Image 1 (spheres, protein in one colour):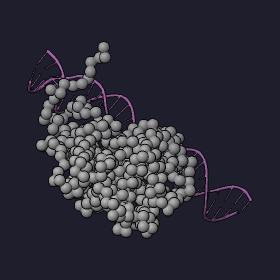
Image 2 (cartoon, rainbow over the protein chains, first blue to last red):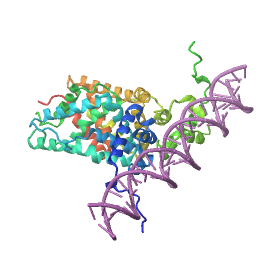
Image 3 (tube, rainbow over the protein chains, first blue to last red):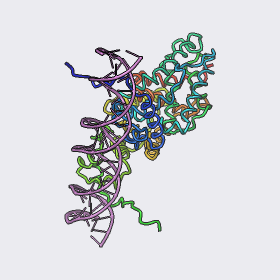
Image 4 (cartoon, rainbow over the protein chains, first blue to last red):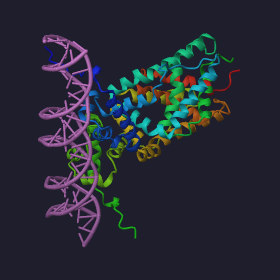
Length: 202
Length: 202
DNA sequence: TCAGCGAGACGAACCGTCTCGTCTCGACAA
DNA sequence: TTGTCGAGACGAGACGGTTCGTCTCGCTGA
């Protein structure tokens, strides 16, 4: 006997409570930052017992992460990169959108709080990888693979490297506040990556 | 009258207490992580009154940051990049060392904790920029400028972009645990940047 | 003499657990 | 179909423990 598992039954879960908790968490993290955010305040604003939060989430970071995910989840659910046939154009579109999102002040506080939480909680990092980052990296890599097969990238281009060359600098600039995250910067990064991994020019 | 400033007199500061606090903070953040680290524990291990910490530091993050800085500060004090005349070789040296440091498990926990703290505390981010990041970016940029004048980079190469293309991917891979941070990866990144911004090949 | 020092008391906030009584839902019998 | 019943999630909040940041104390050294 391993004893009764304390895992609650998801089918009996109260959807209203769940939604109220996520909404309250999203509001409070934007108002207070994650440092001053407490489970008790979330419960109070959501009109919910503390136990209801502790029953379904393992940590404050997990609640905030779910709130972030619920707010940003594409209703269509499917993540996809444009494929017009022109790799440069498609990458510029994606990186411009990414830059725009990172530059949004409303996103900034929540995004930083979430990133900080993810960095120091291995379980949360795994969740973040599985539910957000890996899908994004995968669709990007697949778009690059198509381009490579079409001869728009060198035959020996390392796709993992390419993906990190695209997103890494944007992320680096955003986290450290190094400079403006505007369409021009996105275009510069794309141009550099294509210059490095595009078909040989000589 | 603005009232008496509560700023203590640095000339009367006890150097032994300061050093004991930084040592204790460095040990404890490695043992417990920054989440379970408390000011009271630092004071207890350092054999110091809590007020002595609150008198000189504004936050837990600031103490940890100072501890990190004190531990990593080059005694010679000056930060410099090698300049052998071969840009690729010099960049590989620097990025290999950076990758090695990031891959060090002992550095990992402290580094992540510090990064998380810096990301969510604007005052601390300013400090981090001034005392660590900007000097590093500056020496890197200057090395690139020399190379550009020597014709090892295109005349129109954007040096800010180049620096972010170098460090961004490493940082991105480290934070998200995307893959091994080994010398080979460092070399790949350098090769890509030189491919993008090196002298035209056509 | 006077400001920083070690020590620790203090009230407030929040933690995570727990115990109430209530409410909803599916199973089952009449 | 309808009534009864038990399981389990719910809102509320009491509880002891921990840490917070502030506040005295004498003590010490420049």
